Length: 408
Image 1 (cartoon, rainbow, N blue to C red):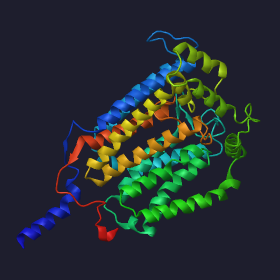
Image 2: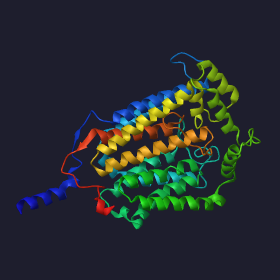
Image 3: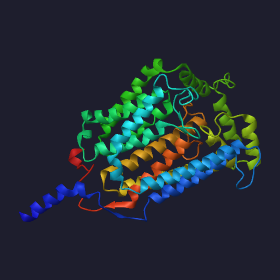
Image 4: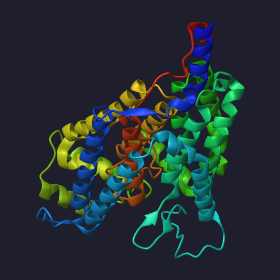
C-alpha cells in the first residue's frame, strides 16, 4: 500500500517536474540548424543573381542580397534567444503573444491607418512599415498558433472525439480569417495542414480528421463567390495552363510561364553564373527574388540542384520530426510537429507555384526567399526545435498522447 501511494504521489507531481531537464548537446535538431544555414546562404546567392547583371567579389553583393544578410544575422540571433529559456516557459507566453499578434492583424485591417504605415502591396494589407524593414504579422501568427495549440492540447483526450476538435478548429480559424481578409490566401492556407499534423501527432482518430478534410474539400467551391476578382483570375489561369492554352501568356499567366521557362532552361546541370544572371534579367521574371526564387535556383543549378534543395529541406524536416519522436513531453512534441508542417507545406506550395502545378497565391520559399519577416520566422522555428532537442525531460513522465489499441 505504501509503495502504491508513493507511486500515485509521484505520478501527480510528474507534470510539474517535466520542466526539469538535462541538457543534451548531441541531438537531431542540429540537422535542422545546418540545413537552415545552407538554405539561407543559397537564398542570399540567388537574390544576388537577381539583383546584379554581373558577378562581383565575395563581399560585393546586390543591395537586396546585403539586406538578406542582415536578416539572416537577425534570424540567427532570434534563434539563439528562443533556444535559451525552456520551451515550456515560452509556452506560458502563448496566450499573451496571441493577443499581441491578433491585435497586429486587426490593426492591418483597421480603417484610417496612415498609408505610410500600412500600404497595400500586391493588393494585400499584410505589412506594417517600420522604416528599414516591413513587419508581416502573419509570419509571427504561425509560430504563436503552434505554441497555443501545443499549450492547449497537452495531456488532453477530448480531441479523440469529434466535438473535442471544435476548440482547436476555432484557434486556427481566427488568425486564418483575419489573414484572409488582408487578403492573403497563401499564408491563411498553411494553418489547416499544420493543425491536422498536430492533431494526428496528438492521437486524434484518423477517420475524424479524414471526414473533416473531405467536408472541407467539398465545401471549398462554396467560397468561390467570396474571392476577389484577381484571386479568381489566378485559378482560371491555372486551368488555362493545364489545358495548354497560351493565349494569356503575356497577361495573367506571364509570371507562371516565365518561371517555367527559366526552370526548363536550367536543364539537368544548370547554367553558368553569368548566363543565369542574363536569363533572369532579360526574361523579367516578376518577384524573382521572392515568390519565384526557386526558378532562379533551378536555372543556375539545374534539375539536380533542385533535387538537392529538396534534400536539404528533408534534412531540416528530418531533424524536426526526429526531435519530436525523441521528445517524451507533449508541448515539445507538438511544437516540432506543428512547425515542421508549416515549413513542409510552404515549401511544397511554393515549388508547385513555380512549376505551374498550383495557382500563384503569394507563398515564399522558407529561408531562401527575400524578406525579413519570413527569415526571422523561419529561424525562430529552427531555434524552437533546437530548444526542444537540447532539453531531455527528467522522469517520471505523465502519459501523453499514448493510447492503447482498445482505444483506437
